[in-house]
Amino acid sequence: MLEASQLSFSYNGGKPLFTNMNLTIQLGEVIGLIAPSGSGKTTLAKILSGHLPAQGGEIRLNRNPIPRRTFHPVQLINQHPEQGFNPRWPLERSLAESFQPNESLLAQLGIKTSWLNRYPHELSGGELQRFAIARALNPQTAFLIADEITAMLDAISQAQIWQVLLSMVEERKLGMLVISHNPQLLTHICTRKVSMHELAC
Amino acid sequence: MPCPYSLIIKDHIVLTIDKLYISFSRYEHGLHRQQVTGLNGVSFFVRPKTINLVTGASGAGKSLLLAAILGLLPANSTCQGHIFFNGKEYRNPAPLRGKEIALIPQSAEGLDPLQRVGKQVRRAARLAGLSRKEASEQTEAVFARYGLGSDVLRLYPFQLSGGMATRVLLACATVGRAQLLLADEPTTGLDEENCEQVFAHLRQLADEGRAVLLISHDISGALPFADDVTILKDGALVETMSAADFRQGICAESYSQALYLALPQNGFILEEEQAHA
Image (cartoon, rainbow over all chains, first blue to last red; front, top):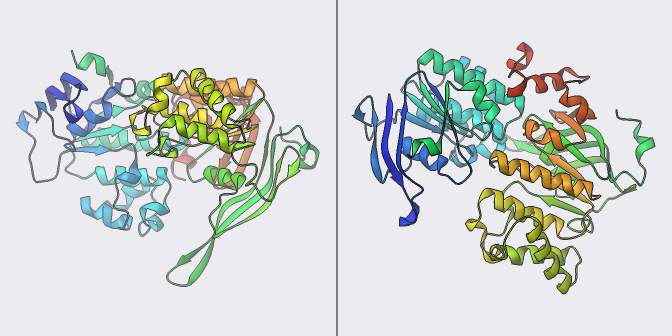
């Protein structure tokens, strides 16, 4: 269980983006988060996955603090995959930084083996996003935060990626928070939906 | 349905793409040169007062198409085929760019980060051939039209939200008299309300007489506003059909059908061959 309680955050000491934010994600649960642009969804995603420190409140995993200096059990899949890869590394090396995925996982995600020795700029956004997902599916991952991960994809790739992700979530009993602007998508994939507004009261 | 292209290269068609081939030469393993095909004989057209939604898998060559229309292909590419603007074939798009054909780029990265947005829109107007006075007037007019207050004129791009940035980009593209607007994924990263607003703005521009080539993955969002749908796959044209047909799932090709069924509201269905393609 991933539990965020009383989180608050503001950029550069300005007006707080949110205060008193509470969210609990159970393993095996897929939660959809909806909110208008600029309400801090991406910031929340970064805090939950340890990319940004929480300024108030705390995040607990199974009632313990999140372990530091080791693999972070909450993995973020970013909206902009091109920002998440070392541009000077072939993708194989970026994947290996997390773990060595087996071929069936790569095939399920639609990654062609010929892409492995390419560099990030040689793949399209959608192709790169598949690598970002593969990298986040490390065996030690317990929770996934998906921040608009298929916004740049066509409908078929979108359905393909969600099918793989949802089967992984089920198979490995992961918990997942899905951020998306597409209400139809959330209705289809989530076990429940919350709005940013409800969380911060 | 597409009719023979020799018949439709007429002046009332704003943009006609006829058998466009684009390939790149790429170096692999040192000096071994390899030809990579980007677009493989794509033909379609954009009628005035309409929105043609161009969609397809990523890597289908949608952005290449825009680069070809604007004459901005990289130096290592070869381009064959014909592009007609108002019935005339053009070899050199530079005089049309920004004046007759305007681009609405994907995100705020299309703006100069170091310049106030008002100044950028005025500059776009000047480059489109407006006089200094007209440029100022038109800039204020388009800002008002897109619900951007006069205080926004003085902001820098980083101070804008995604929706505002898109509206500024719309303002840049429409401040002149461009007849053809090319919109490259204008709604990526926007929330539903903003997406709908952007599509509605494009619809309004089309209704006023401009032609819009809209590249978007957001089929469900864009479809209600489009007139025609063009589907690309792996650099080739799959089919062109009316948006009304596609809304009902009437497609001739199995790929278009698969695309339709994969939309969340149509069942999120994946056909076997697609799932393992």
